[in-house]
Length: 194
Image (cartoon, rainbow, N blue to C red; front, side, top):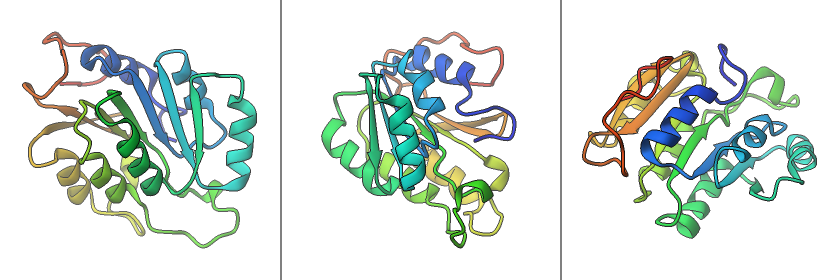
């Protein structure tokens, strides 16, 4: 969860959805499900991934009445790979990468390395048009986190995406010519979205 907003930055998510005609929301790090619940009203389908038993149970309880939400209990890198194999070419997703270890989410376990680079590497194999939001940009280049440069390079995907920052979130969008039915007009007064 970003230091500036609670959950996915809604204004940015909706702008990206509209500009790039995104119809799916794929979240890593469900917590108790507030971003997934919000996304269910704005995207055709939502896939949310959580690895911790307690959070997963709370999320399933909170989201069970939402028919377009699928809760997945697994490590994010494995779940993203399975989603890619099952749905790439069918959905145009907005990825919300928020499966980061915070002090409140460790349950007494020792801190782990961030998986954000492995998540981005998996997403880079998607062929469907998509956009990526990475939460907690302020943590990059700190212990157990990859460097800001390595994340920016991975998000760029060899120049296929433009990278911007708003709030505490990195925003990766297709460069012109790679976007799906995108409009050329500016879509957000809040963030600098290409």
